[in-house]
Image (tube, rainbow, N blue to C red; front, top):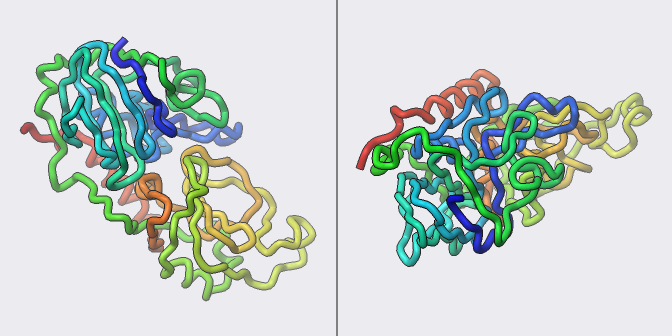
Length: 337
């Protein structure tokens, strides 16, 4: 036993990189909404950061994903932790907790997140990684499916968090931090790269232009399943008769097909929805574009009211961006203070 939960906050869940390979059964990958932040946190404390997002088979070690604020933990056993991702005013007792670096904590200390200052989701990586049962190859929590983590739910007051044995001596882990040049800057305006399609051909060219130039504002009705964006209505081309017959009269209706993680549905042309890591695997609404895997973390770090600008890139650029992201989660990205 390493931590006691004094307050779980609005939603704090146990996550690793996720469980890819089960979309055909309707099971989303889940995992960290910001893969880079959790991966670097695990690396800092000597854990397995996992393999490539959405396609790797090694989910890495599990940590805590903290939404906005409220989480409070009491330390029960000495260990080393790292806080990454959003700046949620993390505190160790009454002192600010430095981010993107390792910190040794001792019995009796409290770790708390008071209020969001930049970004939406922070991550707590713990030496050894959180020890909970593995489901379908992963410890990631999916609260809608009631699987993973602790009984398939967010953590709550009274829970006790146990870790596996650290891979390295705690003394060796102290003083490690991410290079300053790699620390993300969250400023409330987000550039999100997308690959157009798979149903962009159903939208008017003018609407595709609007989608790629408008300042889209994140709606409060957003979560790990879907992130909804508020803006102008997007219009469709005249509807072929076969599509009306097979899928329905609404211009956004299509015959149900697969939804890639990051797919952007536009039901009735209103409020594009980015289907995120807990999103469904099938759907019957046209998808104007798909967020590239390397930028899913950008969407996961947005707070309601913040602005996203979507930028179209090629599939080759998307692959290169993911390679660059994964290559940055490496020992070469760390330095000692």
